[in-house]
Image (tube, rainbow, N blue to C red; front, side):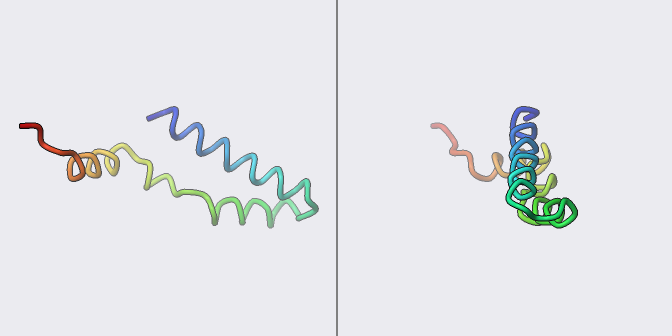
Length: 60
C-alpha cells in the first residue's frame, strides 16, 4: 500500500516539475498537478479493501 502511494506522489511531483520546466509558473503547475492527480481518498486502505471485497471471486 505504501509503495502505491509513494509511486503516485512521485509521479505527481515529476509532472509538476515537467510543467515548470516547460515554462509554466510554479503556482499554476502546482494547481494542475493537484487537479489531475489521483486523490488520496481513492488509494486509501479502506477504499481498496471495499473494492477487493466486492470484486474478488469466491473459490469453490
